[in-house]
Length: 185
Ligand SMILES: [Cu+2]
Image (cartoon, rainbow, N blue to C red):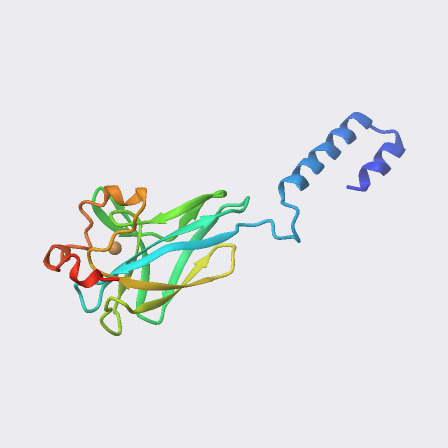
């Protein structure tokens, strides 16, 4: 940036040099001003695992919020409980994905019937009331560890996202469990 002053001193093309300075200032302004952290600012909420029907498989849901100016990407998920992959659901069929974007000033929602975490080869059956420690890995940000509670199989988060949950491929067993008996808090 200081170089510009020298260019002006040489009496070269002042107009062009001035334009360059303005461009540089605007770019710097976009980077955010607090102590060099100009990247994504991630937080995780609404995490839960419906108590699975299966001994070895489960689905997990959560919302990753990005308050930063930069997009990040969820690239992998690990847990001591078993293998974890990230799935998306397209036309009712789920498939594994390499990564999911966490948009700047936006959120990545993993919800029943949509994107979700897929737990496989669980070392033990997950029961309601337990928590599963899950580590989220991102393309740019540091890993985030989340203690994900195991909820009743019928549990749904109270949010607008819960409206379109019909046809969730992981909850075939929901109808068989007593709805409120187990949810007594
Ligand atoms: Cu899945």
